[in-house]
Amino acid sequence: MTAIAVTSSEAQIRSLSDSRLLDLAKCGEADAFAEIYARYRDSIYHYCLRLLKSDDLALDAVQETFLRMHNQMGTLHDGLALRAWLFSIARNYSFNSMRGARLKEPLDVDALSDEDTPYEIYVREEQSANLKALVDGLKPVYREVIVLKEYEGLSYAEIAAVTGTTESAVKSRLFKARKALTRALPAGWIERENQ
Image 1 (cartoon, helix red, strand yellow):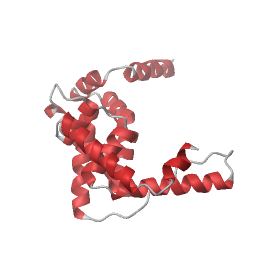
Image 2 (cartoon, one colour; image 1 turned 60 degrees about the vertical axis):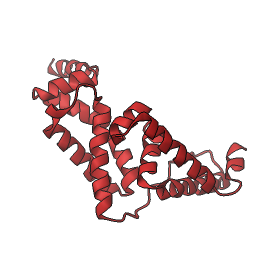
Image 3 (cartoon, helix red, strand yellow; image 1 turned 135 degrees about the vertical axis):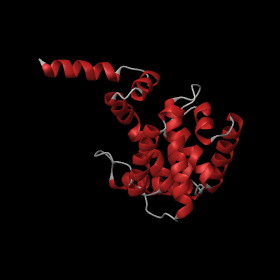
């Protein structure tokens, strides 16, 4: 009987909005904080991994993000969404980490399908490595907006809140980043991708 109540309680917590979870977490509800962590840890991790290029540093950034969130819950402005606030904390930590060290550890290649031929696998790995290298070669402010928009799916408004800029500045950075990526793509890469 207890397992049913726990399951019901867990389902109820999972159904709450970010705003309600934050209110409960501010009141000391550990389950609400745990749900916020479960809801956003993977996104924050992948964002930090793309910025920091190191699994260990990305894991540290996730831990630090949620620790700071816990310690600063009372400072969240009403107009700022929880998701944007968490990415903002992660961003600040990551950029501070980047200032202190040069990072060179590569990311893992995407999971491969069992149905692909060895040639298709080779071509996809090559393209993935090329695109990763191109994104990694961007200035941090451009790499950041590409990761937030293309990989994390944040809106322009959320990216502006995370980066502390305006939506027009975000759009400008995205345009410049995409333009730089397009110019840097290896010859014939777009044609191969469209075949």
